[in-house]
Picture (cartoon, helix red, strand yellow):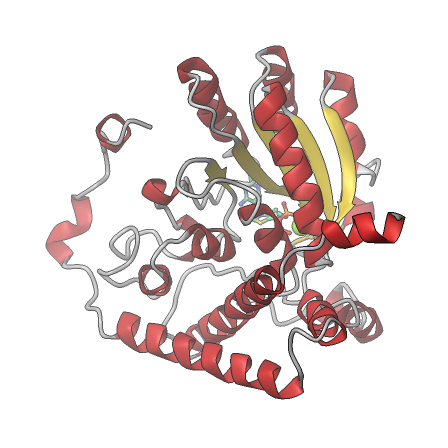
Length: 338
Ligand SMILES: Cc1ncc(C[n+]2csc(CCOP(=O)(O)OP(=O)(O)O)c2C)c(N)n1
Ligand SMILES: [Mg+2]
């Protein structure tokens, strides 16, 4: 009986294949970003999500795309890509081109696309957390039934403004999900060196916020947990705090080539065994949704798509010098009704 019930809860083969494609797309897209950076085609700061893809897939498939709000820090490509932001515009922004989401003037850390519910892309650690609560406050005020996903890193979870926001979100009962992407590092500083209590999920309790810790390396489990929490917040109209356990395979940013200064090769190898993409691959094979041949074909197809995106972005010109003072102030919020 229990087994049958469990089977009922399984996503369809098409869903599983979609999660797989999405994770692989993020991985290849960002591998290409790294190449662009090394070739001098992308500048400034750039931080990839490699190793953390299951988070973006689980959460973005649990919300109403184009309706709900998402805000995050500078590790922001995956969130935008899965919300439906034009991938050429994302790549072009990373490359500083006119076709970018901010006309090439924001760069990798500032992917902004409110029409698809993507409110950035922010570089000040913890600085966007009150902005996310503001989005949730607007939803509550307008009774528009939106949920806000407010992502932050484990390092960001130490910022004072985050605690102030927890207090107000709880006090005002905001439909806001605080998602701590615990990838075990804040730049080169390990979790246990920066957090007095490494169980970050406990930080919601003093404010009366329902909180828990979940696994972010298993896309299917992530989706299940994310869906349950999103549904709860939408119904109860109260905040929630989730610590998602994950691991950053890459360096902090594209310029971080010295990972071995703060972690060993053995640790990296151990964590690679938990690769969320490989894990879902195994499920696809086990459930006869795909065989090795099909997986290879999907991989080749996605690599080709990414190459096309890159070529299209690379064909876009740089912004004109005359545009340098444009869009510094904007009344977009009023125009778009957000
Ligand atoms: C207020 C502030 N302090 C310091 C920095 C420099 N800085 C950039 S990223 C970062 C680490 C943040 O780590 P975490 O929140 O865990 O996010 P992750 O990079 O792991 O996604 C720091 C200290 C900053 N951008 N803003
Ligand atoms: Mg971190």
